[in-house]
Image (cartoon, rainbow, N blue to C red; front, top):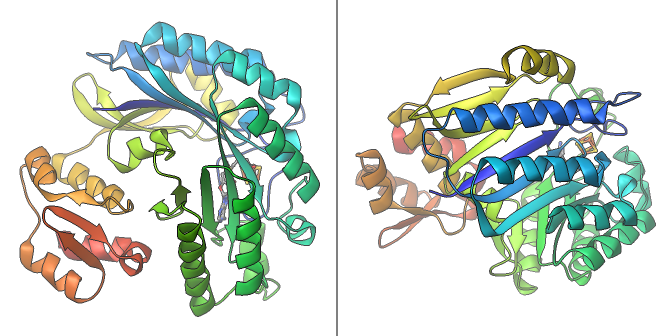
Length: 378
Ligand SMILES: C[S@@+](CC[C@H](N)C(=O)[O-])C[C@H]1O[C@@H](n2cnc3c(N)ncnc32)[C@H](O)[C@@H]1O
Ligand code: SF4
């Protein structure tokens, strides 16, 4: 079973009004103290595993991990390598914000062992970047991208589409521009209005005109068409890559492998003391750190995952992938197969496709995945 480690860095230079990630703005950060907390949680996790699996991937996510110094990233990586056996070709990704990217840090990250960067570009026009509350403009995003590509063999960039007032033609040309940069991976997220964000309030008050369902569905189709033509088809709902350049770390989630999650608010799914366990860490950084100081970890949730729940999660994750679900493997792992009549009925409705033992969601099915899963497991 593939094993990855997720490290959450919960700080950002400013909070974007659409974002509900566990990210916080602080006037000053005692960076060594926060890294000490992450190191403790890593030690606690490894000490509670009966078998220590080989680490195949590490992902620094946030928040904005590119606010960390190379020294801090190096401390975390050295600790992971001391606690677990590491794959020779481990994929080590760090998420970077163009506003906090600098050449010096990128070189330090590379020296520390990072070999892949995911850059939050979000939009390729200045007016929209401003509306998204971003601290960088397009020129800075392009400079950060050039720097990332000079330092790392593998670079991905994030864009948000279905933005306020965005037309299909504008998105098509923006996407073509993004593809022309030549990265082998793109994460293309449809804007979600997350509850209790400033965007949710603006939307409620009619001050944010986002594309209606039809236009958004059209933008999704355009996304598939343009990326496929460029040789970076979707391998997951929002993720596109040239063959072989998929994010191995995210594939662990979607193939329902094991991963440890450390840092405030991080989630994990891994064998702890012999049982598949769901972990979730305390979200508020200061509270997380106090708890880590007292108990060695900041997990507020450590729940054994029943076979029934695990089977459901496995299905949900696998159907996000264009490679789909291996029905025989699923039945073998959970001791229970899926109902053929329900599968056929969802195929009839245009939500699923079956190819021998492989079950896939159609693009329509991927957009309504929760409903499809409920019907399958009902
Ligand atoms: C942790 S951030 C990436 C790194 C860095 N914090 C940044 O913003 O540049 C993860 C990504 O989630 C996406 N995202 C966040 N909130 C979103 C929302 N409400 N709708 C769609 N995408 C969103 C953005 O594309 C963002 O780059
Ligand atoms: S989008 Fe990125 S930079 Fe903006 S608040 Fe969220 S995590 Fe921070």
